[in-house]
Amino acid sequence: MSAEWLRWVRRGGPGERPGGSQEPGPRSPSPAPAPCYRRPRFLRGGGGGEESPRGRRAVRGTGPERPLPWGSGYAEVINAEKSEFNEDQATCCQISIRRRELGLEEDKEWLILCSTQFLTGYYWALFDGHGGPSAAVIASNYLHYCIKQKLEEVAGAITEARPPMHVSGRCVCDSDPQFVEEKHIRVEDMVVGALENAFQECDEVIGQEMEATGQTGGCTALAALYLQGKLYVANAGDSRAILVLKDTIVPMSCEFTPETERQRLQHLAFLFPKLLDGEFTRFEFPRRLKGDDVGQKVLYRDYFMEGWGYKLVEKADLKYPLVHGHGKQARLLGTLAVSRGLGDHQLKVIDTNIEVKPFLSCIPKVNVFDFALHDIKENDVLIMATDGLWDILCNKEVAHMARSFLAENRTDPHRFSELAKCLVRRARGKKIGHQWMLDDSREASYDDISVFVVPLHNRDEDC
Image (tube, rainbow, N blue to C red; front, side, top):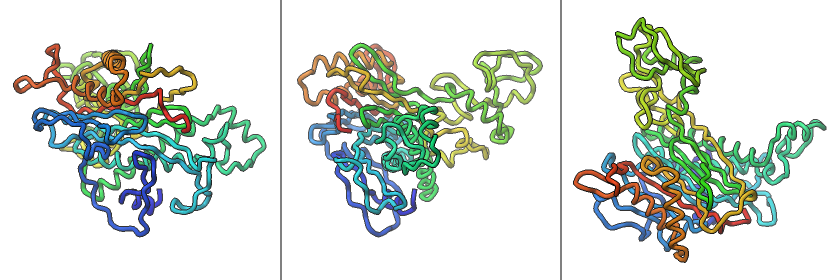
């Protein structure tokens, strides 16, 4: 990423508006202030919110005055006063992907890629901040620019039946096409690689920005991109996306927590033990060991183990575990509840010099859904949400709500926005005394909750 491009983006950049038109880029660089806290652009000035004081946790959502691509719906609610701000952020826009002329900088002339001049992608993303809203705000401003740039770098490859060995199309070795074919490299692999590179680049930008402005914190990132008839869902963190189809539910992401990535984290500690600074043990035990356990054989797991074994406890095993706790209480280095995400470059374990960042991965897992292989029905939707929803509702409950609501409101042109609000309200529950409770008397979510509902049937086929 060139310094000029980064300065351009910090000032607003040649960004894609919700309708897809391009904002003009500035000609001269100028210092950029730190990104300030805000809610998503598409909520500003909208009338889709409930009127109630903060303590009542009003649900805000998109309205007819500011429609989103494909008629998507969005809704959110702030946490139950756990923090001053809603630390979730969201972005939704078109991305125009143009082929760059080799050897020229970003602000030079463009080559015409095809008869429509560019490919159009559609993008939805959710960011769940922790340690403050700053990283989520920056990610919501930058990630789609990074994705746009990385896709433009491979635009020549994603318009071919099979990506060429050289982006220029030059064949240095007569067997180049054969090597590409043997590796089974497809167009979708280039898009997946672009998304992975974009997350990496965005993480670097966040680190630079946070250091320059003296801010701290991080965020999870869940992004969906529709391009050339395929849906790509990239996830780094514990948000979730599912496809609710007529007869099935298709998970499009998996959560990355200290528990789900235990072996990766333990292996890293095995390879680089100095990262633990003598304060933690990489071994996992069913509970925190005590002095009386020394000399006994207890259950344990190491990085190479899916199963369990017995280990003779030594004094060093009494240190705090690298991964400790279970479920939502599991923590990495006693600090973070996620193992992938963006930011957290300055985060250290409390009262130590141990950096958490080396254990965090910013690289997403990307899942691909090919629309050509499925018969999409009128009520089929993509549902993306931060963990505030999924902590309360499982996939089946969300799918049941979606199918029932959409079937009952078939003629409502704003039904996807209303469904998003219904899902948020269901997980938020109602305030009874000082508690938020569900209708079945279970405790509701006290977290920020953000939800996208994206209809699939009337998608733009020209992308």
